[in-house]
Image (tube, rainbow, N blue to C red):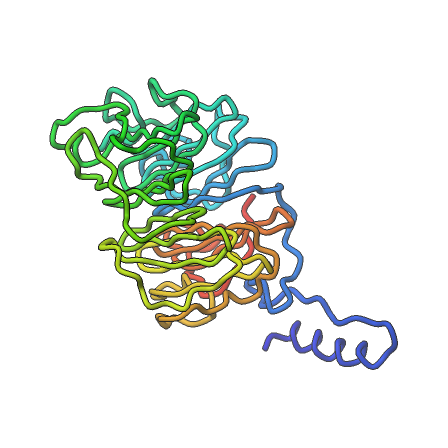
Length: 366
């Protein structure tokens, strides 16, 4: 226990003996971690959502702008590739963004005008342009309009348009000379949400059914209904598994072979994310639970031990959303603050260090 924590404990004991007095609100460990009482975050912008890539993290601010930090090998921070950035960088020429999604080397944002702009790596055509050159600043995906939702995976991206059709671009097919640009997914109509992993993508039909397809399908990619799934509200596809949230806010996770995984998943789920081998959820009570691989502390339970069943990320009581990179996790808080934990080789946790974190720490480098 830190000196600050000891002082706080003693003060709490004293206050508890007095009428109408509350406990002590302490700042946790001296390394910036949240502590068991979810202490107030440092000053920073009002963040609506985050997205976690391989080595970088981006935040959507309440004014519709975007800031990114961490690794910048391909321009995924929206600024010229250079050394990693410990502090958040404003993505230039980008405004009125309503949602974000990232993978290992690129990020895309959906604008209020229902167009999509992407930046970063482009070796597989994941920026939606007629070339495979990396682009530092945001570029508009050619020919794509009326978009209502988007998601990106490893080297490819997909979007749902307001007519319920699904369109994708990029992927390993580009490396095989199949072609560049957007392509409609066959048999994917009347869809409301899409989620993209490394080799698979799945979409939710307005009826609550789920349809999936392979990234490696030769054009046209063709969606196939997953039997036995219904009443689905949303889906999240990770590398080796996917999880669905039902309308009653319960959830189940499945292998890519559509076999149910034996995980006692939390209920009252408001958001879910998946990494290389871990999954996290934000619940209605503001808590965050994670399970799976924990080599870099990405579960946030103060250990480095893998967990077969969900464990609570310590100190978080007001989460409204979660995002997962391959080995790291971030939570958006009701206050507009952001906490992250796990893999931190390029500063993607945002606490100004390169130290892996096995418990949530506040993002401080604004």
